[in-house]
Image (cartoon, rainbow, N blue to C red; front, side):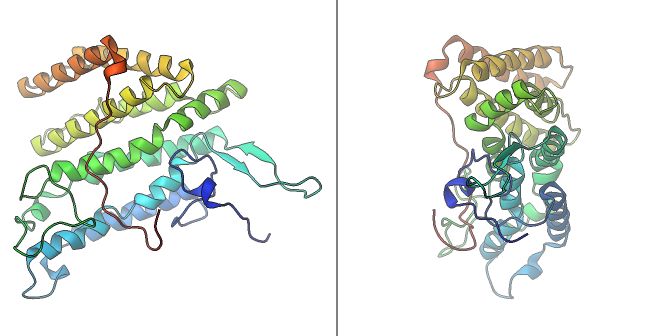
Length: 307
């Protein structure tokens, strides 16, 4: 069939619509390949140990070795996100017998959504407790740089920060304002398409409806949930989209309040849920004052080139 050309202006933007224009992705089925990558990543993390550095090297080096493994799924995640509200199109010319433009079908979108949400599942992105024991405060002369995990803990490693960064990476793609608007537009043209309401409903099910007996995992779930709220606030307050997007997101925020109020949980979790409810209410009382809180920057990692 020959090669297709899609330029950087279509392949690089986070809100990009082209379902097959990506950088550094793999596989003919993007969702299946993300599952493969997550399985490889899981196995590699299970095998991760002090043997991943040389004798006499400081353990600070081991922390940096873990970075590309932890974010191994980042480029495939970006590729899968573009199937949602996605398009297949060419730089078509009259008489060229090429597909001009078509929407990605709803079945493919829903498969992509389910796969994508695995990348915010605490079971996927929690750094195992035994691995945390390998990451002491940084040794002198081995400070953090742009390819290291960031930390809000000062000198000590921050496992919450890793999860915050990983979840924001996915959520900023999934809930990008341009993607949200396309979901509404595509749904209006064909009711079989995935819509914004369904995306957010599924996201809530995979975040706020998750509970963990393990306190470490539950704390990480709170980090993910906070990022979900942060991205929803950003969409609800966005003035560069249509009111339909704002309206749907605001309605879903009301549903989250109802969900959190009805939850039976531990005293500590009840405190967190109450604070999340208050944060939604504060936002809705004055959305114009909202300022998006960015997670720690994801470490540099593109194989070649620069943005």
